[in-house]
Length: 150
Image 1 (cartoon, rainbow, N blue to C red):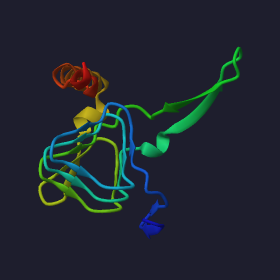
Image 2: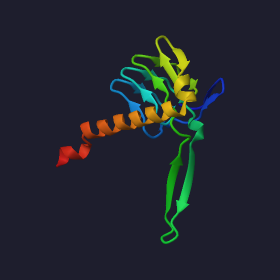
Image 3: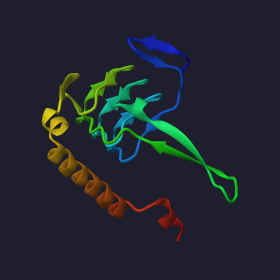
Image 4: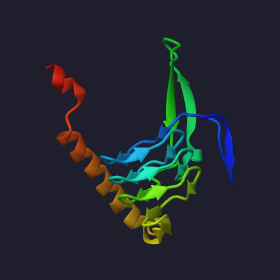
């Protein structure tokens, strides 16, 4: 992909970063160089263009922890917390777009910020629990690839 620049987003990599607890529904397309913040949802048939930054992914920091006994290192990723960005079904996010946390994209590239979720800690906690339950249910329903070989 090389290096490109649009606004304040610079693409210098072809790596796609998906933080923890991401939901990408069937038929959705996440193109190269996209960074999705924790807890984001890309619904059925949605398309996220190349080089998009969804949520505060810049909050990701990598740490190398060295084991004192064996000297081996482990790389840990710390994320800025749940971002709760949502791309609704069949929506298209143009390439090199940056979305703030709690943004909902719908319709013909229309956007809004979910202010009730952003500003109320109780709502945020409830939404986080519901999101984690959704992920847990999907883990139970969708069997891993190892089941095929048993």
